[in-house]
Image (cartoon, rainbow, N blue to C red):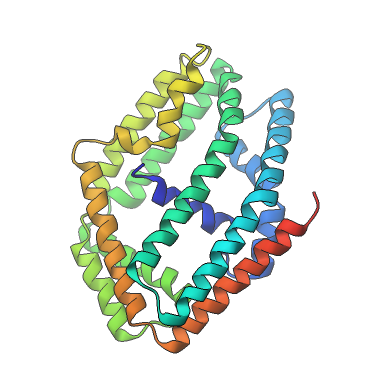
Length: 284
């Protein structure tokens, strides 16, 4: 599942990796409101659908709090312990694979409810959803694809440096150079991403037109769980090459991490582990 690594990063960032413990705690404890707001951005539900969404999400939320947050804490403490001897390439890859597993578990747990919500949409709601998704795709084209190569490279470096410095603290010049070198070697896939997302949207839209079919959820599942299988020819291979280059860069930056940076990351991971444990211990 070629695209799960991207989803994993989004999941962990959204639920855990905010700038402070208070911010992360407030974010997680208000997920029901945030999810409702996010859904409202895409589609206006009727009262029965809103009630069903609320009940479905509370069920998912309880599962996540009681089963997933403790697992996050175990993994975070494990990774913190590995920093004593530095962080190896395989350990970084294993951590990303663990994130993928967490993401897939969360997605799978809520999938049946998500598919049922789509089935309940009327024609006006479907048109609204399609219009909003098309708008998002056009925004992506304007904000990302339409940039010049130097602009995309500059943005890629800025985002990566910010992400790493939030975990390691200030990077030294050699580490910054590694990021710049990686950005030079990174294959620009903006056009491929746009074409693949457009093709995905076309398939999703067509499937919504047949949402009352008995096998709708089964036919929808590959689009949600493995959108990479619908990518344009050559896109998947290029994504894999970029992922390997990114892993090489992260490994090189980690290999040059100073004791201060390793301690910074270790404290951060332990802080997040403690946060997960506190959140998991809260009653609904």
